[in-house]
Amino acid sequence: MIRKDPLYATAHELTRRAAIEIPQDYLTGLEAMAAEESEDLSSFVLAAMLENYKAAKEDARAMCADTGVPRFYVKAGNEAKIEGGMVAVEEALRSGLAKATHDIPLRPNRVHPLWRHDNNNNVGINAPEVEYSFEPDADWVDITTVHKGGLFGTDYRMLFPGDGIDGIKRFFLDAMIAFGKRGLACQPAIVGIGLGGSKDTSMVLGKQAACLRTVGDRNPDPKIAELELELMDMGNNIGMGPMGFVGSSMVVDCHIEVGYTHTGGMPMSVHSFCLSSRRSVARLYADGRVQYRTDPEWFTPYHRRNDVSWQPEAAKQSA
Image: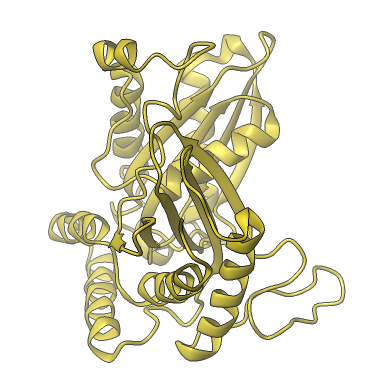
């Protein structure tokens, strides 16, 4: 059984790691982008970003003054047993985040939308968000924290089926230009796209695509993978770079996730993570072990299953 105390300690440590340590996949992608950037101002900003990441780790301080809005993703193995159940998990996440906000420290960004007051700890009504997923034949629990930035880097459009791939590209470019011209999306960043589902599902898929996949990861559908690369290339050829300066450094990677949708429409959302790409993951075992990593491994074959019942052998053959 997974005990309560490790849950609290893990939430606190995850928050610290996400705020301070840049994931290696994103760092590698950004370094490659900086090596190819030819515009002086954009090159200067990218170099400053890389230097800042190094300083944050050396000084054990948050990598950005705006520490984002922390949220959690919980993937529970079907055989996992947790002391106090899922209510204990949520209490541990809220408590760990509240303490970490003061210990690291983080900026207490969470405020009431109308009255603008806050609890000075990034915890409040419906905050932090906690999303859940499950995995068969497993007794562990994965907890991922993401400190989402890029406040204005999100958009949605209901497309018609007849808009097709060209319509997807058109909206993607419209969104990138709107995000980039004032630097509002904190680019360069990983961009996530949610296609299909209902409007709310599309928004969830797009944010997860931006936040829960690593740089270089491709969708298992070859045609979707090809579209990811094409959109990434398009996003880096609109003439914009960091902070809205002229450049070619807008999209570190592009990830697409899909969901079956109503036959009459094609919902699409676009989400820009932010230049800090703050995420950290921990796997908790019943024997007390905790293993940390930066790849959420959220989109498993089970998560993307297409049949009524789970057929692991069929999934292996189609992979």
